[in-house]
Image 1 (tube, helix red, strand yellow):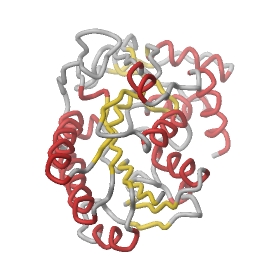
Image 2 (image 1 turned 90 degrees about the horizontal axis):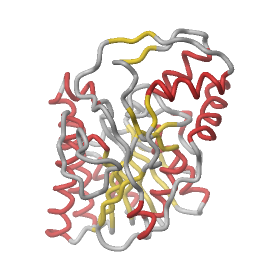
Image 3 (image 1 turned 180 degrees about the horizontal axis):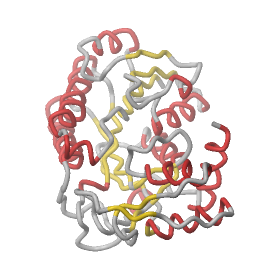
Length: 304
């Protein structure tokens, strides 16, 4: 299949690209390199150094004529979306609309779109199912929710199929510190350099950490998903930030006490999701435990 991956030089996108190439797909990438890195780019792809808001995106569609879009390009920081909501909306909403307009124009078959646990806000129950009410507490969550609604509109207007994959806190190799699982990257770097890690709030807040290679595989499997659907992609395991640091300290073999900083605005207290729906309908479930994923992540950061 001919697949265009936006954000394909980034953390999650580059892992998706590697998996697509391994399975014999033709792949092209659009990436502005704001978060992406040249060293993440697979040598077998056509790379376009371009912002998703750029009018020249249509030229890429004209040249590549993709069958499918995996749209990973985004402004990924909850904190930045609160401090600069106009920029967040410009990239995540206007940029995505530019992609959707070209999908409609060039009659691309389908888009796979990553949503976020940020759409759920402070949960009313745990684990969170896909039918949980949306209660956004940041511009980032609002932008994700807005595009979900646009996808339904484009489905009705142009017959474009979509699969929305709602990620929990993704972590793993190639991650920077900005994403929702960025705490793992931060802890890795500080533990490896013998620096004191810091935690916002008391550390009792919980998250659902899912390994990036499991997320990439969910995208590959979603390519064959029929119709238009919404699935959680998660580990269904609740881990506090204090517990995370303790596990990582044991892997590294050195206990370092953290410094606690004031709680950040927009951060929810507890979050864990269920992957029951995607397991039943697509056959996906995570294959990496938190400990195994963290060990691979440490191996990556030791080499860079």
